[in-house]
Amino acid sequence: MTAPTPTRGATKFDKFIEKRRISQETVAEALGVTSAAIYGWRKGIRKPRTAYRNAIAIWTSGAVPVASWGDDAERYVVSHVKPYSKSA
Image (tube, rainbow, N blue to C red; front, side, top):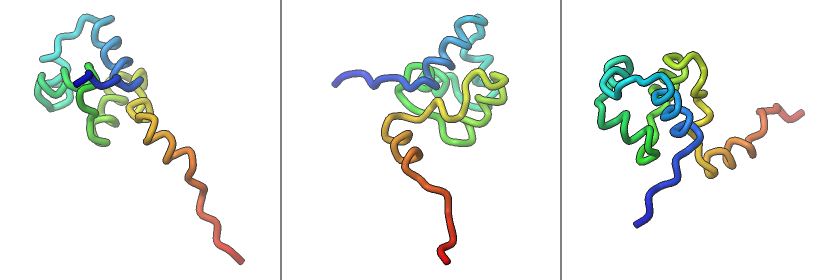
């Protein structure tokens, strides 16, 4: 079994943490999750739920945007949605 390809969010989150030399424990405490969750998110093994994607965006001051966690399938779905328009 091959390792999953990390999303842009995972890569940005990992780089944010590495560049600032923040421990996983510190990040986990700030976000209210386990160090194992942080590890999984950073390595692209798992993606955070929407609430945590928002929390990460806030905690990183926008360096890791919510939308960056989406994979190709999610981006495809979102790109094909049209705004609601009431027909006459």
